[in-house]
Amino acid sequence: MEAKTPYEVPPEMREFAERSVEQARKAFDGFIGAAHKAVDTAHGSAESTRVNTHDVARKAISYAENNVAAAFDLAQKLVQSKDLNEVMAHQTEFMKAQMASLQSQFKEIGATAQEIATKAAETVTKATKAK
Image 1: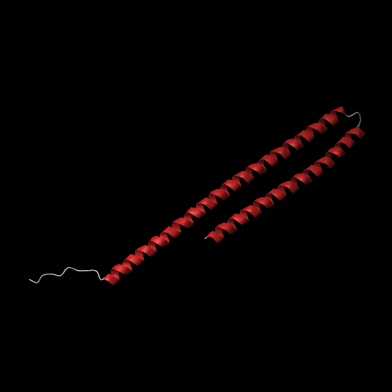
Image 2: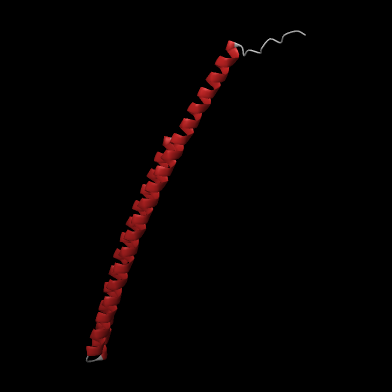
């Protein structure tokens, strides 16, 4: 019987395999780095969204408190009114003040919504560029 010669991997194949493993490792490290960035960006975006939602909710509650207080003030004035002319004057004054207040509230909420949208767009743009 003839002695079998052990199989040896040619040096070129070994170098090719080593380069392939190294390239795969670098690609994987790049993928993991991108995943970490995406998670960090998402966390920052989620935190920003939470804070913005909290601010909007606080504003809405404040607006509701102001509007209810104004309605109670009107009710108090109406109860103390001496005649129909005074009732109508209080009602007219209340409506004008409420329309101005609502306009201001809508303006503030609109500005806040625009600010939130701008920040969200900037976050998306940064995340897209980071990829």
